[in-house]
Each structure stands twice: as structure tokens, then as C-alpha cells.
Image (cartoon, rainbow, N blue to C red):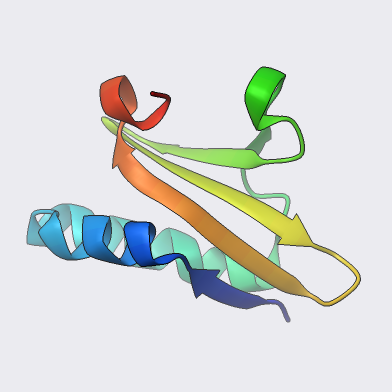
Length: 83
């Protein structure tokens, strides 16, 4: 099992989401505890990170396999999250 930690930015973004999206995001975060490869690998400036798509949202996270920790860096709409 992996421990999922949210950055301050991700925590604030999660609180601002509509309840139906919050529920979907929380379900995905629970799945990450079991499978850190749930998302797709990212490239470019986000190399080493993964993303999970929950249309129209994205969850960007970075796993630390040696310490079994997943840091969720950002949660947001796909048009805003990559800026």
C-alpha cells in the first residue's frame, strides 16, 4: 500500500470542486494507494510525473517508489492545470 499525500495547492483545488467531481477524485486517490501506475506517464516539463484523466479534470502526481509515497501535486481542469 502506498500513502497518498496532497500538496496544499491540490488540497485547495479539491475543496473548490463540485461534490460529484470531489467524489470521483477521491475514488481515484483511493485506487492510487493500491496501484501507483494507474495514470499515464507524462513527458516534457512534467517528466517523472503521472496524470489521471477524469474529464474535464486532471490529477497530476509523482510517486516515490522507495518510500511508498505518492505526492498529488495538482488537481484541476485540463485547460488550466498545465500552465
